[in-house]
Image 1: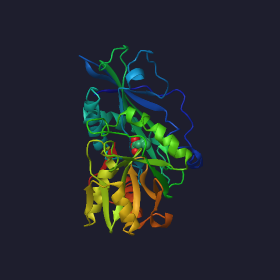
Image 2: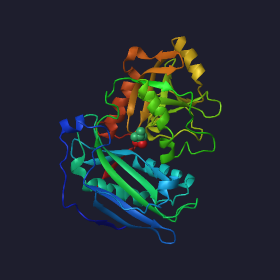
Image 3: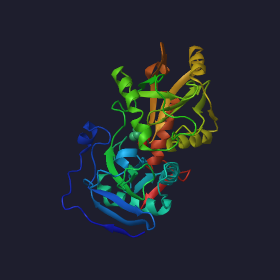
Image 4: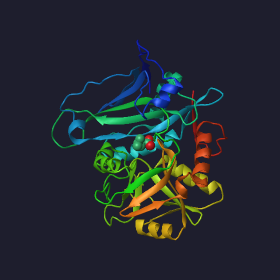
Length: 357
Ligand code: COI
């Protein structure tokens, strides 16, 4: 795919490490963005890197009405020897196509689109921060933009990618977060869109998130939407526990997002010669294990958050506390090893690093 390039005439100020540390996650954007158009009959065409800026859509564009929109999230890093790398981006491209399939969005050519994203990242590589815990967050997304009001799939789409230099997702960095178990709303049901990274899943979670925020919790933990019993995922990330010294995470069931960091954690733990158990785990079972002193750690795992220890999980009147409100040894080791591979401070023994050339 030929990638055209229109450089910005007004380069912006690149945040200093201090400015970046003061900014909130995902609020600063680089100078350029990637756009690729799709029209039924013509396929994907006109890949271009252009100055970051507003877009023009007809008010009748169907994305505004019916939410036909999928997205991804991945990260790019600058290594100590000056190379630019991305972490497992081919996993994101594959998942994007799985989301497209579910949402009736035109599929992408995974390797061609990845090369186009790499072209954008290379263009704005001066924006990649290098302080510990920072990265360039890469946000590809696809929007349905045909103008009509009937309910059907669009005949045209726009694939875009924008870039944002970021620090930790949670303002406290690696400090343990408090999570509330959601018992009023549901996120996903079998046969729904839970496994897809579609905008509507996130819009539907906002009410619950706002109520949890107001009660002093930074995230919610979703239970399955049928029995309201089995642990699924945290709003924007997966979850894992250490029970009797073994790492456990809910098994994928079609309503849980198959996270790239989740997959990496499973592979990493297995490489330590330890089991990582994927199974159904009910909140009641977790509470019983916790009461018996068998749950030593809980952690949220995701691209934006990487590994974030959970200090407290509130389920009704039961406030389960983990590891005295401190990061535990498993979460710390996972964080250290994953971030070291991401930044190439450790050897890439799994072939997870994609070099932008
Ligand atoms: C990510 O981890 O990349 C996500 O898309 C989740 C969102 C909460 C930022």
